[in-house]
Length: 278
Image (cartoon, rainbow, N blue to C red; front, top):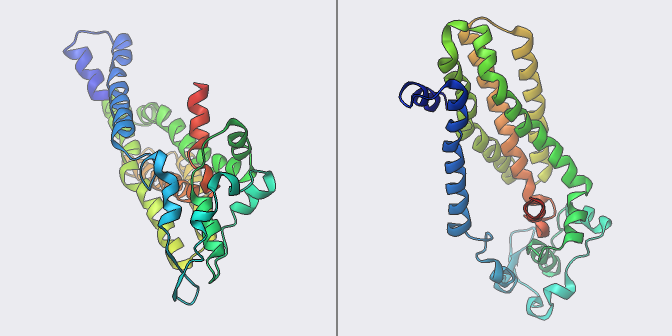
């Protein structure tokens, strides 16, 4: 953005007051293009088109017991209509669903778990119950702390650098501030990958939750370090902010790693409601 701003001022002849506003046309175009690509090029669900999402339950032919042996599933998948046997959306059942299924060798719990993974047709009533369940609200809170904190810092970091290092000027201060956001390309995926590795080795969602809490606490510590030190050394300041970016972005990635475990039958429904409200 600083480079676009400089180009509009120096080559486009715009005043700084107008140049900043015109510069935002670029991210607008990028966001719209990527949004359209996601709509038209991506699959509706992990198993394919939205209309065929129920077919997954018919494709399950075997399950693995806790001792590692493969056994035949009870063969009831085709006999139970998803719409009639779908899990209740009462508050008690929403809380029960997040605890995760317990598998046994006869395949019955495997069947229930598979049905619970099927994303159901969104309804306003069910979506409201999901959104205001305490599991969803707590996850929203951790997301607000990570991504919300990132947006807040992004909005003032350039001015903060300019105050502490006036010799950098507006453009260089903006460029160094942009590095904070650029670290998202690495740090956010790392947070999710570490969460998945922990889950793979522990077979427990709790491991993901502990990693998320750790990243959030470390993010808070780094925020305090940046503010309390308030260094006039560029190397120290940029290093502290990079450390903050790692834990803040990793916390965001860890947050997304927990999302699939929260009411999997309703994944995507809060987004549906937000889109309807726009």
